[in-house]
Image (cartoon, rainbow, N blue to C red; front, top):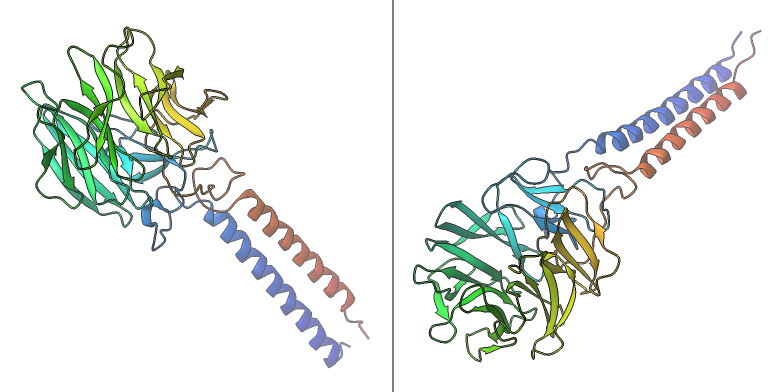
Length: 368
């Protein structure tokens, strides 16, 4: 017969085994179930919201709604440290990201729904949008967000073939012109500290001259004279994080674009390689640009280029400290469990089953 004491021991062992198995199954469900969470529905944090986990990432999209990344016209973020990782969607609407606030909580975006109709808006961390300005000029030729996220500057191609530069509150309002009378500027960009604005002074034809002025429009001066380089017309500008140098790319030379660097006093013009639309990493050590086959990242001296797959072109680099994607060992686009999580839970489950079997074997009652 099975004694009452042994029966109790057997029941206790069975309950213990069931508890181990239940915990193990719960862990496995958490691991495998988490990996199925879609990448475009990240769990937001109170501070970063929809931008959670995007520190040091590059965002891109299409101003006109053309199909991009994955065949859809959304706004995407790509991890520069994981060239083969699938980009993460951060917006279900189209738009071209232009600039971040310095804390990575606001993103300036451009939409051009129709010809001669451009809309600038700020995408906020909570997912809301703030329309800054709607322009009816022939073409909006560049815009930038101040580092503190309070101001937006933009240039607008007018029917009189001029490109005035405007400033407006990021919350919306009435734009006002800045700069000297008759300023014909394109692609204005705030300096990292917000005290200066770099822009391209347009001349005759395609000639452009990189120039700088104070944020209030005073002190405008040309860094490089238009036409000083034969067959070179600068197209976009980007600041180094230290505010002492600029990147500029050559758009209209009839050959692949070149990227140059120049000091803010106009000295030290250096050609570093091919590419377009340069943007700098937060620490200034690397440059991202649009190459022949899409997004390329390399050191600022032009060495070690890396093609980032599944991204079509370069956009602004999130200035927050780099945040590796959860699941760094996985090639899934979801931010769920990593392979390490799954392996760990599997080992725990096997150990639990082994302990339960051992316990039952030791406690197996003798039959009288």
